[in-house]
Image 1 (cartoon, rainbow, N blue to C red):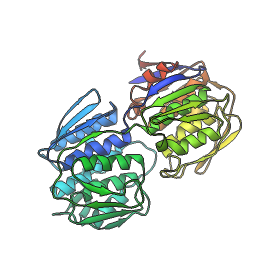
Image 2 (cartoon, rainbow, N blue to C red):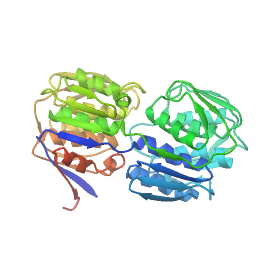
Image 3 (cartoon, helix red, strand yellow):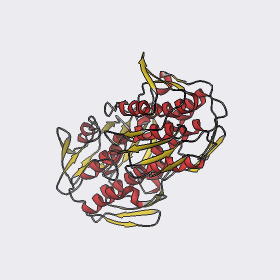
Image 4 (cartoon, rainbow, N blue to C red):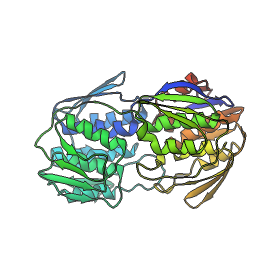
Length: 419
């Protein structure tokens, strides 16, 4: 098992290129199930979750190649509609094979998924949407079994704008008979990118990025040809690290409006932010100022940036209140950050952060993907050598993070657990 050694206390400065978005890549790669031809995807990040997705798709019968950020998938034949526990347990997004398998093959058997332990994240909205499209669904032995000769278009009104449920419903509806309207759908940039990818396959979709997505079902789809959008969460993480270490960092390769709610909070915290066409520059104006944050669905402040913003507030001047409204168990990084000397108090679904001028290095253990990033940030700010273990969580969502941080001046290295 790998770990990261960090010698903190140095400002980050320079320019870094963000990778393709993990949260866009996963559903887009899975959507290849829908097309009978070969699909080609560019700017796919080399991450553990991508490897897991490829394994799931290979099991279902898709052949694949993955080299230098380009993945090709051939879905000429689906070998099985059974996605077993041993594969699905590693990643929550595996449940997204349910909709496309059902739409193309008329049946799907998918294990209830695993992933980061940051909350219950039930799949009831996924099942609700598929039932509205005419699927018969049963739960048996930890598996979801869905059947339908052909799905029927319908109006699907979500109780909550769930990203995953919106994606599953979109992929199911593109091959359904008639028109489907998804109301109160998620608006995230990753939803928009999925719609763009599906249209290259011949899908008829409009309204993505709004509350109401309209889909006219077609009889068949071809292969896709798509370049994945830039990762806004990776970009936000590097910018938050620049704020925390009082540096100046430019991130290239994403649309700034995808991160606007986060940039507004950086500015509120005293940073100077310059938005380019496909770049963002953050320059810290000395020590940041304490700033309150509440996570919300897009276009609000993303839950995937909560831990990283908290880490930046740990070294800000003044107090901050960080409130989590999306997941009920997303404060597992709090006791680990406290080991660095951070002053944190959990109050229900909020954390009161009292900023400190300096932190002290300590051994840390990652608990989930975004928590891992916050611990790395804490180590970058702390005096002395911080060691972060269990960074396989980090590798699920950040491509070559330590290399990119080194290019910005960080003193960080990856070592084996035995070293």
